[in-house]
Image (cartoon, rainbow, N blue to C red; front, top):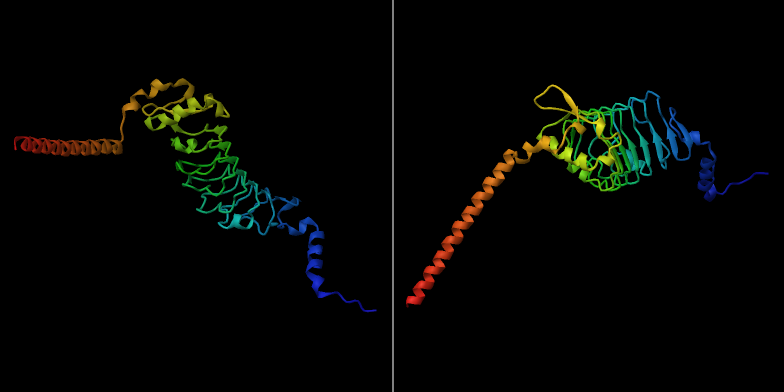
Length: 281
């Protein structure tokens, strides 16, 4: 007897077959799908991010590979990612828009890469980040707006980079910050570092390794000292140092005030003279 299968039921049948397939069928060949939402591709010598993943992946582990870039459209396809471990790869830069669509990402580990700078707003689409690990890179420049919109960030690791200075605005932009790592950088104890030093003193409880682990170099001496050996008095001469921009602003303000005073005096004198003429008449 010949059996007929209704065509209208074919999509449901195919979907059921896909669901019943072993989870490994959805994984890139170099990876292991630990469960329905976790993909493990660690230590496989991968030169790029393997593709495709299950679209609903939430935890992706690609540490210990040779990956040089995060695809610009990565989070557009994998917007459910909550945990991304990109540790110990070969990233040299983060392109603008890299994290577009990453509005669920909470844990991001980019440590042990070759990043040299962080541009303004690079993480602005990742507003749910709780932990951001950037230690052991080659960071020499962090824009003061690099972490804007990261209102939920609690842990920030900037340790073991090439930072000589850091604008305090970078840290002030993180209202939920509880733990920060700054040790292992070649900080330069000059006037530019003064504001960061005062911030560190006021927020010493947030330093994971403590104040005693942070060193800086004295500008005129070939030696490094620990921050606990310094005090506010060490930067007393900086309180009165002005940049060229500051001087221009002060001079410009003085000129404007002077002109305003002259105009006011002329106007007042004219009014008084007119008043006296009217009185004589």
